Image (cartoon, rainbow, N blue to C red; front, side):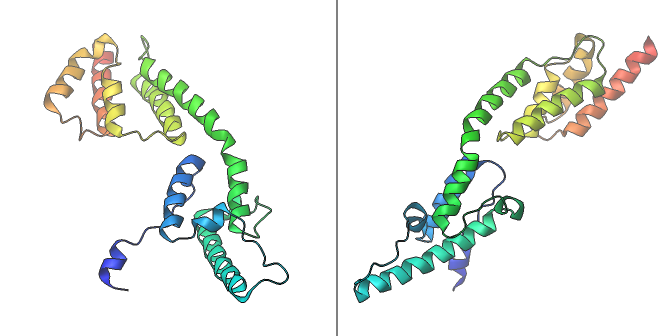
Amino acid sequence: MNSSDNFVQLAIPRFDGHYDHLSILMDNFLRSKEYWNVVESRVAEPTTGATEAQKIEFEVLKLKDFKAKNYLFQAIDRSILETILCKETSKKIWNSMKKKYQGNVKAKRIQLQGLRTEFETLRMKSGEAVADFFSRTMAIASKKRIHGEQMQDVTIVEKILRSMTPKFNFVVCFIEETKDIDELSIDELQSSLLNHEQKIIQQD
């Protein structure tokens, strides 16, 4: 295999709990290997009286099925594989995964929509400590990521800056004017707001 072949080699997808995402990646991956047909269709044993050509075709398909199974085994963690009873063929493995996880897709989408609304309406409460507001914000952000949301840190930083109570207006304006928000980490933002909070407490 030459260097150009190595360059286009696809990585084996890994199941991260999101079946719909894995389905897209694995479909593409196995099609690129020309193995998807054995996942979609059952590899039928040749009947009595099958021709030599049919027997050879079966052996070819059986080898493809074995290779497809090998990729699926590498994509799925052992703890999940242990819950899949039928492992005879790649089709049975995939159908078991589909039955086990696809039903959760709709529920996860509904939950994610609720989390998006909760995140957008989130505001710092009057008298709430900076640390507590950050904890609430990060808890919702973490849940969104678990449910498949591709969420960048800058989105969280911007959300926090526009959701602080009025007594933080000065420091929020200062941060927006002097910092590159795209590069500002969540920890740096929290540190700046905690310092400002401490000054407010001392003044009181």
